[in-house]
Image (cartoon, rainbow, N blue to C red; front, side, top):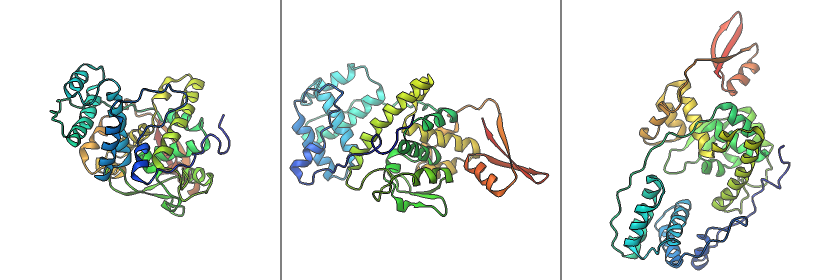
Length: 336
């Protein structure tokens, strides 16, 4: 059952402090009441001071928070000031090479700031093909969550934007006449204008218009409010997966829908440059993975017939491709 109204989807307003001393606390991870309180890292002061230094150098807040989280996790297990001990721990800990490379990057910046000698270990990221759900599974998830969460997921599914890009959308970014969304990029990507369906327009218009942003209030910190919204989504997704007895639903994350859109778009068009522009990638190597992400062994289609312009429009918005016209009827198809 979908929750009604604002109680479950509402993001409490919260803004980061502005004076330098108070901003130290901003980089502390907020404790989730249901989780046990973790011990304070012995070098927390150095970690937070390093975080402020990164911010002054122009690093984005989400990158800084990732660095703080990784360094705190290490410091709870082995003092960061014991460089050789950290290297030994990193070599023996049972985590993926990708995570080790990420932690090594955090440590390299930290030790350079601290003035300590550090030879970065040679861990290499292991590329894995992401999980791609079926469209039916995606639609089941969207149909089983709250109104605001459903609109957010539908936006990710139709456009392939990153969660942070969707979260930053303002009402002024939506052109209702052209059914277009103007996307401000993240991670050095390109800005883009993407088409959205009338169904999605209706879902968005059904949300409260209480701020300039579509999904959060004006005075809410975008990072902490998105973290809060992610926890809401996690709980809703778990309920949907349990109700449907389908554990694959639990593998659908926000970024999964970006992979889903790119994979389906490439399979539909066979145009890698089109997919590159859709995702806002600046390097085509980041897009090439979608050329072999999903195997479609059978060309099984659902076929529909449109007799009017409105019916044809609805089919196109639902993902159907125009095939031909027979005896005045327009035929459309979509892969099962």
